[in-house]
Image (cartoon, rainbow, N blue to C red):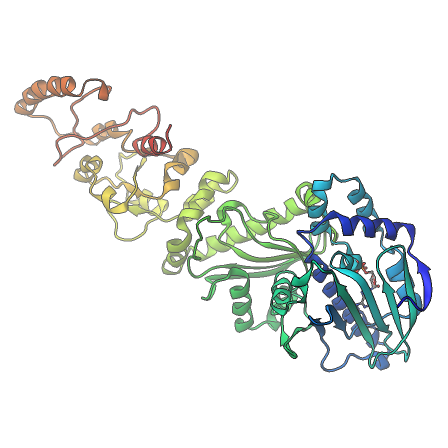
Length: 542
Ligand code: ADP
Ligand code: MG
């Protein structure tokens, strides 16, 4: 049905269409993101126009409607937006009006074939993405404030037609004649999944027609962009559940708008419970990056890995919508946002750490992950150590390094700790006996990360951290009890006997005053790895 006026695409559009259609398969679903974004933009535009022209006011039931028709193999995306006049159809859909799309087309043309799919996925190609899934696209549009409607139609090959049409109300229908190999996009459930993933934050209602019924498909309302006073607790919690896949309420909610040299809105949550971890726990931060409300990616690493328990959204004005992965890695904007967001989260944790009972709820869930920060974050290492919580040989519950320092003996020069796999086993370790007998507190560290951070931190408030499996000789400084003559002569017999029996299995056998009830203990040399580290290395085959 190629009636109507024939028009040629501009040369650039022709080339771009060719590239898009042939470049990919795996990322085809982004066509829906692009079309829904256009529908939302057009609705925004009409709202704006209505401010000065009442005749263009939006209908009360304004929405974006996604309607699949399996039998006819048609997928229609309709909006109540500003619509397009005949001239606008030709200009907007027949030429590349945006320099960004043109630049992208060039980049795409020069990319290696294997890089093209991800390029398209990252950039988006606007309206033309429709031709990835459709062998023909009809656009029926009626400009708000006008009576006439027009049909734009193309197979995406060289030309398009424009002919008169009818449309009951102002707005636009994008009608996709779905390709034979793109059945997925005629399935309401699949479409709903795609909308949830890519367009959930669109603030206009989106509905999907399922068995003749319209169902709401988007939850988010770009909540993060609203002033705090306009959002209620329940909306926040619901959004939290959506982004975190948790079902509880957040332990912390951070919502702020940065203005000035850096412009972004952030809405972040620290979960109230530990998320259920799948076989392959995620190691990187999955904060969602949006640019002017549009979802861009959740792997921009907006927070360091040790803050990966934080979920939420950062939405910035300072990046172009068609930002590529390469550009994300290189741009100083992202690095500055990352720094600002990280500092904000740390300062929230510092504030909340002042309330012990409250902070312990956080610590029980994410303490081990948090401690990776002491190891990983050179800039904040000491601040983080100051709010970290620890088990200790003399205290019930959790303690801090500062509380430990207050309790230390006058002659005590170090913070003592012991590492191992299980807290209960540590508490009854023979290594502790000498310290316990002299009333010297020892921190009991039983998380995997505890084998790493104390060395990195090294010193806290001018006090060195020492693993008692290496620094047992420190005990002598605390007035070691004199051995009786009887003990001395016993050792003179036992030590050579043990040396002979153990042979090469140990490097030495020595008398010690660190034991009280146990007969022998295994000790690590002061230089070199501690015992827990040796165990870990053995386990990993080193
Ligand atoms: P972009 O949205 O980035 O401008 P697109 O290729 O997605 O680029 O769309 C090109 C243009 O077509 C838009 O700028 C807009 O003017 C017009 N357009 C696309 N879809 C619609 C729509 N549903 N309603 C009104 N105008 C639209
Ligand atoms: Mg667009």
